[in-house]
Structure formats: structure tokens, C-alpha cells
Length: 298
Image (cartoon, rainbow, N blue to C red):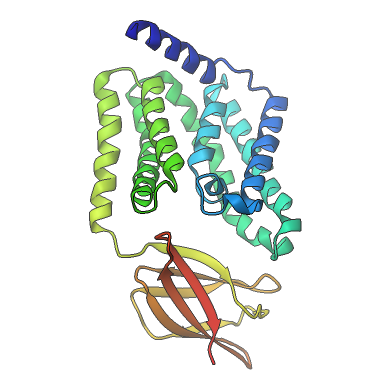
């Protein structure tokens, strides 16, 4: 019975990772479909703070989609181009579909530039990633960053699930399932599979025990939406725990901030004769997430 089940699983994985027709029309439809589904998860309030909402924030679902494309291409260049086009269509479309439903309107596209950078990186990554099909030590080496990322996502989600059951349980299981699936499909020996499972796990655990209280980095609009110029500078008390800089100027003026500790810190933006005073608060919400609140200083 076990042998029969294994053969069924192998037939299924052989079809998913090598037996699909990944033509250009399929890639385009695939990109549009995943974008529409993701936009729905981001727009409909019921999905807020769920595993489904994370499709618009983190990479685990997009890793899954990309690996399917790469494994069903016949050449590494084909893999690079089709993966690139998939992200080139899907990511901006997600933002476009959200515009009518968001208070930020077209300003949403200010966040797209980071996804665009990853889209460009897809060209070399998908070219190299195609070689996971070789089912060798090279495959394991190429998979290593992906296995580490998915293991990190899975452990983080399980931690959140234990504290706020059953939130993010789907994410935790989905990421773990991807790790096991890729090791099953793209590695040959038991040693490869064992190393592919244990080494990322060990690395993530070391990081968990040594990392700072908070690992937060993001871009934010300012509450009164000032239009900053290239001369804008940020002044704040020197701190190794909070860093703030101007991310973009003009109509879409934003700041970039990072923090490794919860707390409150004042800062001032000086832009020529204009001066804007704010208070940055980094806090933990009821779901255990690090959140940012920026308020004008009185």
C-alpha cells in the first residue's frame, strides 16, 4: 500500500513539475489569475490578518508559483523569460486592481518599486533555478535560499499560530509542505533530503535565538502628506535602535524607517523653510505583529 501511495505521489509531482504545458498564453493567463486572486484577498476585509492576505505581502505563494513555471520550461533561458514576464504582469496588476478600493488610490504604486526590483532579479534567479530539475547536489545548493526562506516563514507562522490559534496555521503548513515537496521532487538521495531539511532549520533557530527584539523595516506616508523636496533632511536623537530617512519626494513623499526595539521617538523633517515634527511609535499589536504609528507632534 505504501509503495502504491508513493507511486501516486510521484505521478502527481511529475505532472506538476515537468508535465504541464507552460506556453506563453498559459503564463499570461496564470499571471492574470494569480493577480486577481491576490487582489481579492487584499481588498475583501474578511481576509485581513489571515494567511490569504499574506499573498500580497510575503513571498511564500509566489515561490510556489515560480517553481511551477521553472520546472515546466525546457531551457534555462525560457525559464528566466517566462518567470520574469509572469511577475511583470501579476505584480503591477495586483496594485492596479486595488486602486479603486484603497484610500491611497494611485499612490499604492509607490510600493511597487520593491516588487519591481524582485521582478528584475527573477531573470538571473529563474535562469539558475531551472537547474533544480537535475535532482543533484547542485539542485540542493540552488534550493538552499528558498528552503531557508520557507523554513523561516513556517516557524514564524507556527509561533504566531500557537499564540493566536488558528491564525496563520495555513501559512505554517503551506510553507512546511513546500519544503518537504521540493526535497522530495528535486533531490535524489536521503542525505540530500536530510541536509535540505536540517540545515535551514538550524540556521533559522540560531537566528531566532540571537535576533533583536524587533526586526522592522518599511516605507510610510506621513500623516499630513507633505510634499517634500530633494533638500528634505530628517533630524532625530541619535539612536542605534531607530533609523529614519527620506524614501521618496514629490507628490508621493514617503519615509523609510527601520527599528529593532519597541518604543517612541520624536523626529523632525526640515525642508528649506518648512519644518515638520512627528512622533514615531513602534508597538506590538494584539496579534503579536510589530506596527508603526506616526503622529504629528503637538
